[in-house]
Image (cartoon, rainbow, N blue to C red):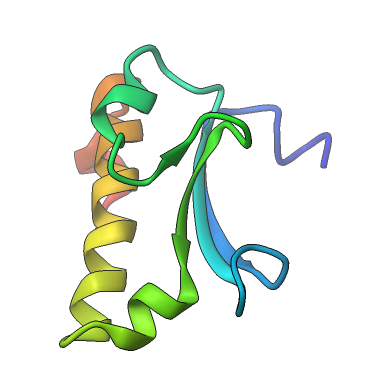
Length: 91
């Protein structure tokens, strides 16, 4: 963990404890100013991260698109607000 948090990062994953059937999560570390506001549709202030319940994805007309939108939205917010060199990071 020490090495993982020695630089800025965007983290994504699945948490079995979030929601009735688990939830996808995303966060930026350190959280750049404005991240909560830019990701407001997903941001949980008590957890200080973005959460998308599995049920919402499973019930969506296009689950792949919903999850992709969540991942893209939260990553782009972190990268843009923290002024990351996206051309160097993204292949």
